[in-house]
Amino acid sequence: MAHPDLKAPVPPGAAAAFVAGDERRAATLLARARDEQPAGSVAWAQLERLYGLALIHVQREVEGTFALERADAVLDAAGAARPDLGWLGPAASLESRDEW
Image (cartoon, rainbow, N blue to C red):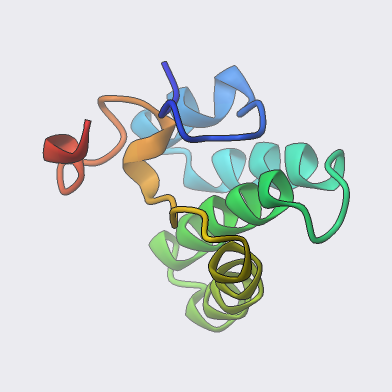
């Protein structure tokens, strides 16, 4: 189950792909879901941030960092939380488990 503050539907396969080690597939699914949201919306920004984190995880740091910068500007302006990979589901990130 996705984090309760997530405003956009995360593709069910994105978390499963990430946990299974297929980070590129997870990034692709997140990008497709992001593209279905209105640009500049909180839902778009949350998915863009998760996409950026997935890119960084596969060592595409530059692209991932730019995605985080785009997303964080929107999220900060809206006063919304910044998602981490733990928002995809309980098995996606060990670092954020105490945030649930």
